Image 1 (cartoon, helix red, strand yellow):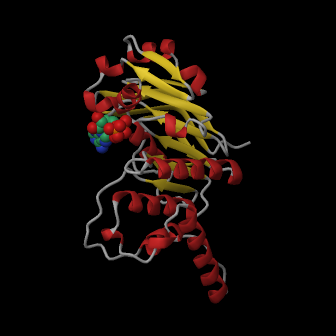
Image 2: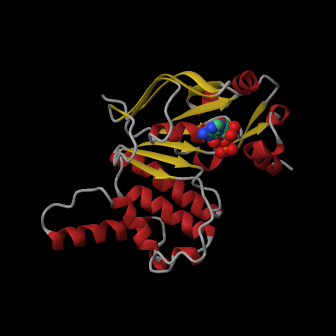
Length: 274
Ligand SMILES: Nc1ncnc2c1ncn2[C@@H]1O[C@H](COP(=O)(O)OP(=O)(O)OP(=O)(O)O)[C@@H](O)[C@H]1O
């Protein structure tokens, strides 16, 4: 079976700074890969490589058996959240419709328009955004805008879904809705998901494997293999404790190698222990 995403001996460096090197990775259709690591470890850069927005410094990267290229309709992308100008008058459903640009709709204009509308409606409903689909995007809350971005990435039924911290600014209920939706999409339509996150717990049920990047080093494997005291201590080169608390993973002690801001995934669960 052709891997949905394939990296071979992939290297990415900015000047002298090597983010990762010798990265061999196959993500299968339908697989959900969580990409974890502290700030600046190269998670977003990995997605940018797969989007054809940044060349590798070495090795190869393929999506759907072809070398990566910009503008591939095989990819759905949920970018890291940015504030939207409040004067933006584009409606939510038009934003979602942009995810269908570049798709073929056949020669029958009316039928094609109806099919397009149905796809947009289904995507809006799936993220719970149908109620505000006609509102100008600039007037929506951060979480509402984020749900539209998720719908935009899903509407084209991509073979590969690249998600850059898509749960940020969503409340807990919508974190669950969105992560379950993305996981379902992976299983049902065979989309491969690369999901960048600082916090594995909201997606733990969905995750097949983890790619954990720290300071040029990395580990790939199922959460039970990677999210362990031994593996993370080796990666961080300092003592890191990984605890299992009911169905949650709690990582404590990675701060030594990182800044306070880097440790959102470490601090939030640890606070739950109090
Ligand atoms: N075009 C570029 N030129 C030089 N350095 C860059 C460039 N793009 C990113 N970097 C640097 O590479 C490092 C990795 O950035 P990246 O955004 O991939 O990290 P990240 O793991 O996604 O971090 P975060 O968790 O903060 O989002 C950062 O130190 C960043 O400043």
